[in-house]
Amino acid sequence: MEEYKDQQFVEFVVKSIVDNPDAVSTQRRTDEMGVLITLTVDPKDLGQVIGRQGATAKAIRTLLRVVGAKNQARVNLKINEPEGDRMRRHEQRPMDSSMDAPAPSMNSTSSAIDNLDI
Image (cartoon, rainbow, N blue to C red; front, side, top):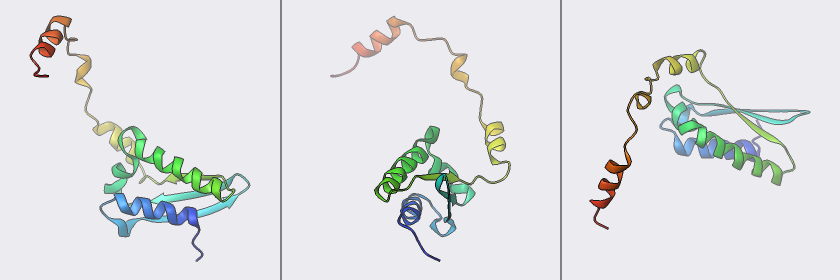
């Protein structure tokens, strides 16, 4: 099987950030829209690959587009999620209790700032 630079790049980066690098695999498919790299990782490592609010996945995709542009190709990344995983994560997410808490008053904030040793 021929390895492409974009595919090698994704595997290198992802294997560097996950706990189980042996479970990382990619598939590369080319069509009229460009290149699609499908990434599969251990379900326990999915959060590390996606990152907070998708920041890590977005960064990988951005860098992958640069690698693709260098090779005159439009490259996209799809991260495989286990079947039903997105729904389970949504159900397990605790309710945001910050909405119930009253906003701090200006007096309490300014007195906290006054007490800092700067």
